[in-house]
Structures are given as structure tokens and as C-alpha cells.
Image 1 (cartoon, rainbow, N blue to C red):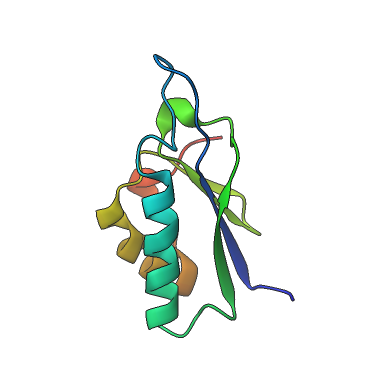
Image 2 (cartoon, rainbow, N blue to C red):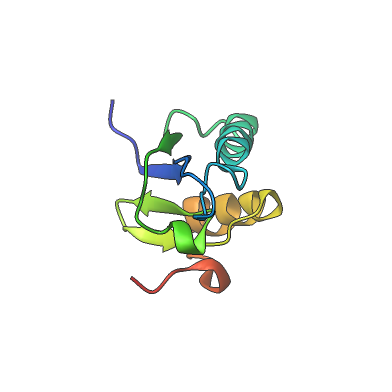
Length: 101
């Protein structure tokens, strides 16, 4: 199955005191993206799934959107709708959350 876009959300767990996306709502973000995509009927075109470490935990919770390879950091549950509407649908990355990698 080929997707128009693919969202990988870090759910990595690290031992304290290291920052960990998984500890910072990683799985909750996965579920929120899936919910938003399903409500819009986009789950066939766009996939959101959990991922291991994206090497961006210091900026977490983090995620990356492909095929563009745009990394986002400090993503909160309240940001999901905006990312779906602006980036996944309208192809405009949400600049305030983009990590400059």
C-alpha cells in the first residue's frame, strides 16, 4: 500500500533522567493523529504510526512527516489538528514546530 504522506511519531522510552518522547505523550499523539485522519476519511491516503527513536528526543515529543522529511518538535495533543490541516492536507508545514534538521 502506498501512502501520500507518512507520519512517524516517536514513542521511544528512555531511562530517567533522559528526556523521552514516549514519556511525553508519544502514544497519545499516535492515537490523536489516527483519530483525526479517520474522522476526515484520510486514513487510506495518510498513515500515522509509532516509531522508535528519531534522534530528536531532546526536542520531543517529536515526529517526522515523509516524503518531505519534515521534523517537528515539542508537539502537543493540541497541535495535531493544525498539523493535519496545514501540513498533511494543505502541504504547508507548521513552521513554529519545525525542527531545523
